[in-house]
Image (cartoon, rainbow, N blue to C red; front, top):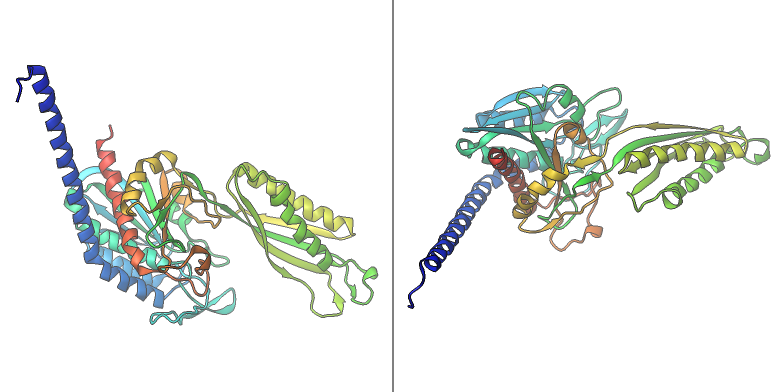
Length: 442
């Protein structure tokens, strides 16, 4: 080997040291990933068992007593500080790490829906209940059974890592995400009111939701990720008359048909949907009692979905104007009532960018980082003053396309349990990586 100048030898030595450091860091990272995968694999049989049990024994919003007890008992067995009865049936578990640091929260919802299940699963729900004065079936038709089970699994994994955790993890098991029964309050807003994000104060909050996409795929979007949801009610009043003499009255059914058609032009022709998507849907129309009587009134209800506050207000104004003017033009009247619902789910852009590598790692690279979802959530109550990120986990059967899979809230909604390890890994990794990065941030 030719003689090298001292500077060249130093440069080569520096390059070698950097290479060895990089190799060592890569090896450490791989070792950490392998250890985490092992911990998750060890808990997955429990996660599946919990999920199937919750699926077979679903409980409606504000009635999640059995579910809450199973959750609380598990958290206590892990040695966590547990608080029950938050917002009625909510449960909070606090895991204090072995090292000081910030506080991260992971949230799962526990409630089921008034849906009668149509499946051949051996653990299908046959539960019956009363909802809105009617006898209904009860089903986890939105996958909250899997959310609860995955967060219980994440709690067990993180409890096993307690000594090395630089901070605190708060596990929030929420009731009534689907909305409290009439005359009751519940859900995320009440949990926040009752201190879910305090004692200790939460620095960031994460959640995920199962969705009919490729199994194991994680989807998210910085900024507005899920729509605001408002309830629409329109009462159209005419003048009752004989069906054979419509000219002697004012037909509210015909007026309602005109209004329904015209409402669609608000988003199709009057709203700049290049700025943000928006939807106006009429879901029910009720009027009349007999085939040959033109009724006095018709009641319509529906939903409004928006991603921008200014657009939200503008669409509300246009709905009222459209319904009122159409009814007035034919001698009738329309009363429009819009009840504000859930706010826009907002993923903090800086936190989303920070956690993007964590999300990609958890999903093995199967990610969609520009996902927009028209359904709504009450998760914004947690992120009103706290940065947060909300993810979607794909749970389709292998080979089933998105358009062919039963939708959330369907009687045949299906969760592919093979995707659940990715959900547990995402929850655990979001918590550990956030705490680790917070520790190193001045």
